[in-house]
Image 1 (cartoon, rainbow, N blue to C red):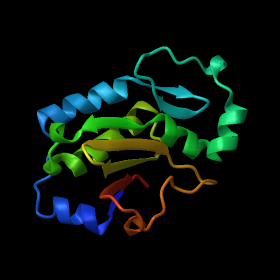
Image 2: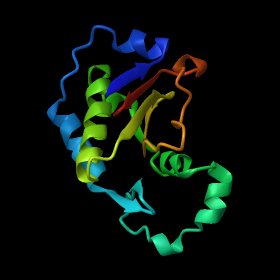
Image 3: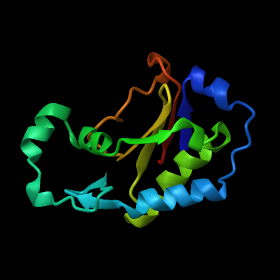
Image 4: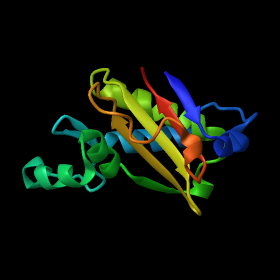
Length: 152
């Protein structure tokens, strides 16, 4: 496993202690508990009513390109920025990746945390041999702070 981050994120979390707090652990359990497998993709199902038979995968894959894009698109969680302090960013991404891997039989995952204006954008997907990661490995190509945890 390793972390990848752009310079903007490195500046934000540099020197921050990164232990998982009770609030972060609670949030992680709430997220992971609302995931399920859909067509071998880990999908966050907030309402708990997602049915695989109701999804037009052919149309979706034409738009997003591959299963990694589908997963990352389904797994867009927006969290108020003030609810997670910078000293929890590394712990949050690593904790989410490890918990998803444990829940789904050791599958390798990538977790992204990016900072938007007033929100944290949290996304995740399975790492697939025949597909690239959701974002470019050079995170400095993006204009917002981004952190990526990759399980290998």
